Length: 367
Image (cartoon, rainbow, N blue to C red; front, side, top):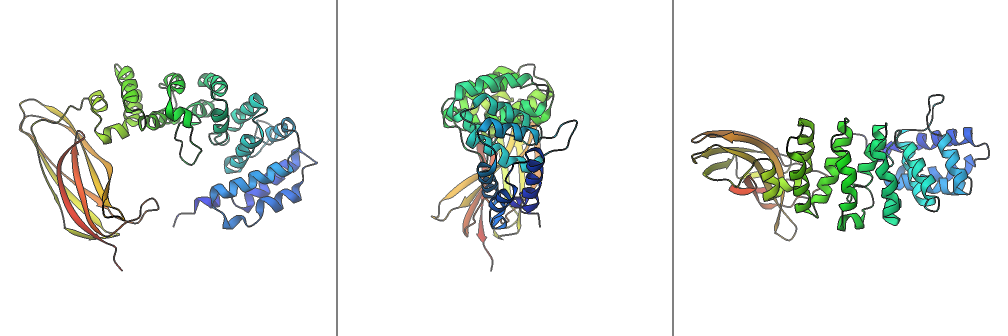
């Protein structure tokens, strides 16, 4: 079994933070910090642990904030010394978010220095939320930074719906202020940065689908292979939804002359088992057609209705009269993000975003 994520912040991390702070700040209240940060730590979840360590920093670091910022800066690794890195810096970035708003530029400078050693994407968001124009003016200048972690912070930290982090409601309503950042990084040499750009565009697509489809259309002509990959990943939600303009951006027109024969290997399944799908797609039109095949599992909810979850499958170009036969195994197993209910479920085949075939199955939860 995989190690729980919460164990990334364990008592040894608290000790490491205390060691480093004591080394650079002789007046640091180590005993108090360790008592506050470590209290009942193992009973807490990951973010609760981080916030408890942050609160211990608030109680024990020097005041005012510029003095604490200097101490934290000295805790970071350099060419001459080892220092704090990895998950130990999550509560540090949260400390900056909690205490640094009145020292705006100093705080952003510290978060920029911190991010090569552990991302500052969680700490930077309060600055964007509280002072968006001022923050984006500084963050926007990072798109040309020599360090790819800093460039990624420019895109990842400004994501409107960053997972695990506070949302940015102003950018959810109007994402136009971050488009220059995304445009500047669209051909970044690091895949790490480009994937962040794609994820930010995908966030935006959930609220502004036409805007993202238009952005992709504007940037796809003559695109390199790397940029095409980025734009496709940015469009993944729109493609699953069958958004017409998004499909058109990648050469997928409304399906014509498509006959689909679809079956499941059995009509009933127990939670923990797998379904096997078999699909035959025949193309009867007179011209070749590019198709994208996805499938949606309509999961039963507590009230008896169903809710679809779309999964990617495959794509192909079909010549007139051609038939493709494909098979897929789909596991119906317990996951932390879904609660299963017994009863009727449905699988729907989507061709270029449109329903082409379906089949039903019954789910039982077993003993």
